[in-house]
Length: 64
Image 1: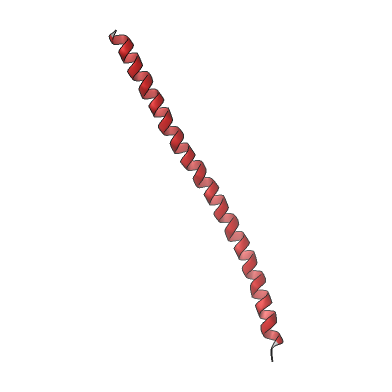
Image 2: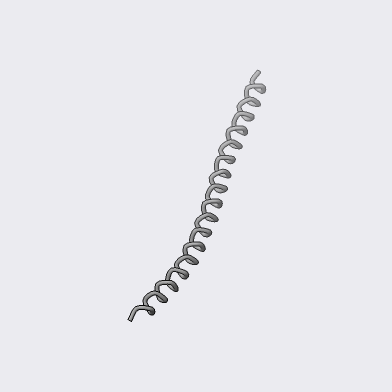
C-alpha cells in the first residue's frame, strides 16, 4: 500500500507541475502577441504622423 500511495503522490505532483508550466507558457504567448500588437500600432502611428506633418506643412505654406 505504501508504494501505491507514493506512486499516487508522485503522479499528482507531476500533473500539478505540468499545469503550472502550461500557465507560464500561456503568459509568454500572450506577452508575445501583445508585443506584436504594440509594434504594429507604433508603425501605424509613425506613418500617420509623417503624413499629418506633411499635410500641416503644406497648409502652413499656403497661408501668406
